[in-house]
Length: 114
Image (cartoon, rainbow, N blue to C red):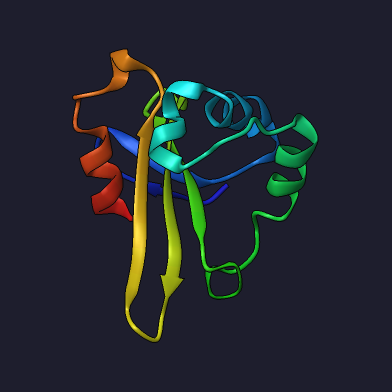
């Protein structure tokens, strides 16, 4: 597995094994205001999403990477969305799932690695 390696975290591509992690995040209503989510996602839809996550950023106009700590624990996600190469624009979303992992600089380091 190819990763972007940082001092405290690594970024890696989504894997089928991330199904439960992504399912929990997408269906946690406390995060919905951050993502404009208005309804829950089924496991089936998230499984399909993970199966298609290998699409090129130029085709999909988005990229999602997993944030892992140095013990290889999955702690969050970093997203590039609304990618527009021609106009050199994109949105960025960073989510560190557990409150105990927040305010440790993981989000900043994820952005720097990206």
